[in-house]
Amino acid sequence: MATAEPAWLKAARAKLGTREAPGAANNPTIMGWAKRLGTKALGIAYNADSVPWCGVFVAACMQEAGLPTAPIAVRASAWAGYGISLPRHRLAPGAILVFQRPGGGHVAFYVGEDDNAYHVLGGNQSDNVTVARIEKARCVAARWPISVPIAGSPVRMAARAGVPLSRDEA
Image (cartoon, rainbow, N blue to C red; front, side, top):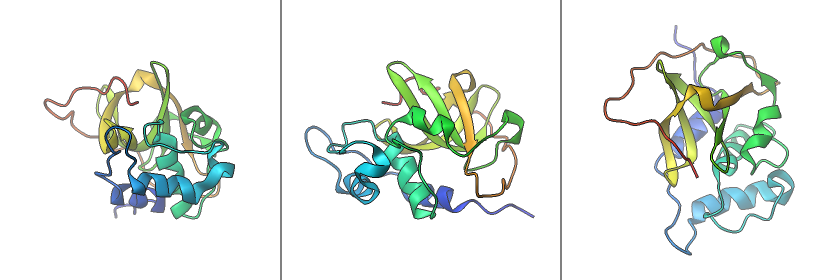
């Protein structure tokens, strides 16, 4: 019997294709997530989708699932202390993965893996909500909400032909 996806991952999938607005414009959907989360959850007055929004995306999905967010949720690195730590052999769809990248961090949801990369559903991946492949060595934390039983196990996926590893998610 297949394990049902956690509510926050369902919320994330519903946002696939959401894209930040080009130039000085702002996507009202992304700005709406930030407004609903507010300064207390995000840790800043979020005022433009040109500001990295991977943490805003994760926080919006967690909030929609009725779960708390990381303190200063706009910062990807803040998610490294969220909930409980998951060993890599216990990853399950919906696990929150935190990555290092040049100039900062990135946070997204685990959906699977191949030999070299985690496949993650996240915001601000090529300026939109996508599934990207990120090198496993860049992962600095794997987390799960403390109040939710871990459901599922690692998902083996084939490396997608022609899809390179993501190098910079900002």
